[in-house]
Length: 295
Image (cartoon, rainbow, N blue to C red):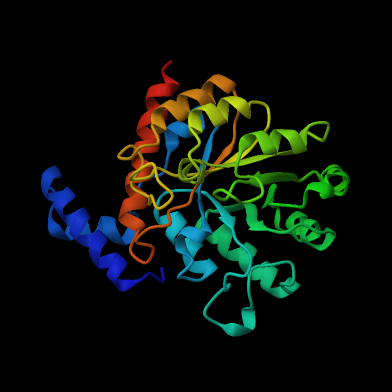
């Protein structure tokens, strides 16, 4: 796996300390580090939920490296973002609708080799070529922030290609920062058009994520899931369950709604060395899922 060496060193320190607590030898700890940094979220499967990574969490790296890091977390799903370098070979270009058929196949092969599925793509635009690209790559969701007068066109494309469009909430004053705006513009349109719920951006905009989820019931397609250190525009990501988002309450609400969305870890802090912190997010998510699966 191509990984940032400093990222690996920070994780090795963490896993060695963990191993000591478990009575493992240093060699065994190093073996664990070489294979995986987390064990995925098997209890989420019992709820019909999928946990993966938004490749933006690894935007200092190539898409292939983002796939490798996702696999090292024990996760099987990834959301690509537009124009990330595919590999370190400039000839492979960037992840977008302009990828050649040869590069697309190379990406598909790498995903299959790592046991990771490309489920979603964004935040970007929408167009027929992007929908065609998504269909070819097996992508289910396009995450975007379209113009308010584009929904009739989007409706037709969603139904033709059987692909969802999830409206993303960047912080205020972006176009869809408030769930009320999302609801206003999806009303009367296909159920394939709904929300990509960025819980951290809601907090930055002064919106209670739990109340936002309740408002959007019936229109939630996926999550860019976050927990923040404080309720402020400059709040930054922290491991889930350690911040102000009340992650458990959000997951309880998702279960109440009976939906089966994609949860993408989008970790935008300490970004060259964030893998150990993302591993904590994965472990916390699975712990809560284990509790919810019993109720």
